[in-house]
Length: 330
View 1: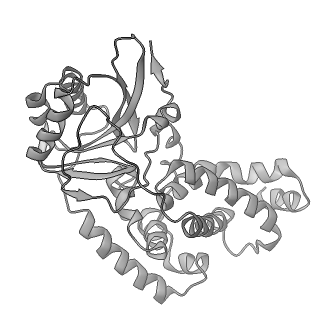
View 2: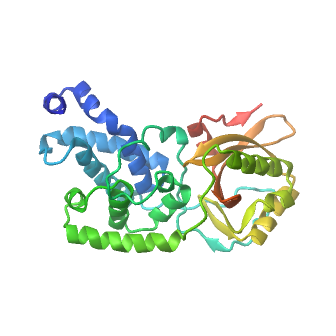
View 3: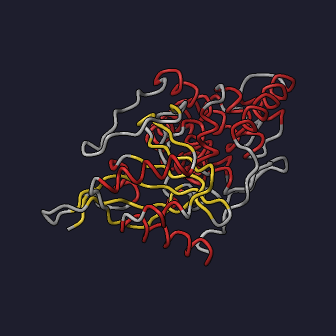
């Protein structure tokens, strides 16, 4: 069946090419997202991948499966995207009625976007190779994707292909036009780099479990009411607050308390609409106004550790439509 589709696609049959590649489309998009840290960039890279595969199908020699070959094409398209786009610049603080708090640090990864859980359906159920080291949920978490972006491109690709997807070293070497020895060396360095940025933590409650639901409901109640004490009680001691593409970062519960206190004292109040991103609880935030129209003011993503919130990431409101959320509420 696959051989017939390849033959027809090589002859210019677009429907055959679509039938050949469609089963892998969603997982390739997630692969590009891990490589680039941006859903927008991942969508562009996926389109480049499919175009390159269509144009280069004559060069497919059949030594590997069509899936493996597509991963090779996608990985190289992502290399090109990283070289051409570099990293986008950060943005300035965007709460005119709130004076920003002095940050505890500036982000290494400024251009970062979450991925809606709706786009993960089907992509997370693909069979992994026997050498995969990470749980599916961990390998798409916001912390994991962020840590990946700091790695050099080839180390990043090797770690994803080997430890996340479980491809064999010889398959990865073939994909990257490299050697097994070079792949193993890059993997060793990538693991060390990732370990420095992802220390072991207590696992999060299972998605949609009663424990998660209670914690998320308590957060929403505290944030919507502007109750700093109730909000801070939900945070870990080393909670991490970031707002990409604003590069300011805040770490520690006391610092977070001052930041949220400053925001709440300004009179800013939002209504939160639940969603999910990167396998984590998330909210569309809508700023209350005297006009009655509540305009989107951001997308919040929570990272849970045990029974606490260990990270709060606020993204730009431009992302709301990608999550099926309106730009404003009546």
